Image 1: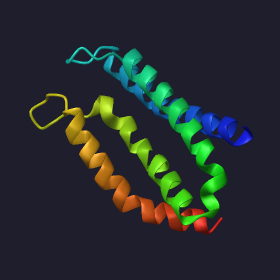
Image 2: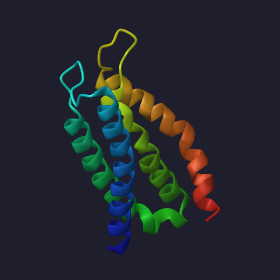
Image 3: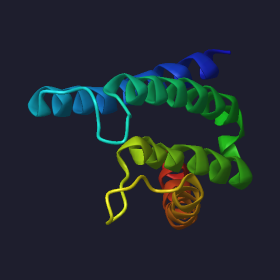
Length: 124
């Protein structure tokens, strides 16, 4: 249970860092609204929800990090942090990126980064 609490705390810490960036952007822009109807508050809710859920999953996987499959699964969750940029993703035409396209990019990015994360976890 301590691992889950630790994971959630880590997820909240990441969410707070991403949120600070988004709030700073809103302050600099002078608006909490984005052209497609998304607001800063939607983004913050997304970040904290993802941080809590991802952190809990990461914490649940913590005891398995001694095995290669546990390291790979943890790396996949850890790499999932890249999804935090979804609310800000725009295509070249200015429209929101379809969730399926972002999911495919995320899966590819995780597949590329997961072995590197496994190496990092192996050195601990």
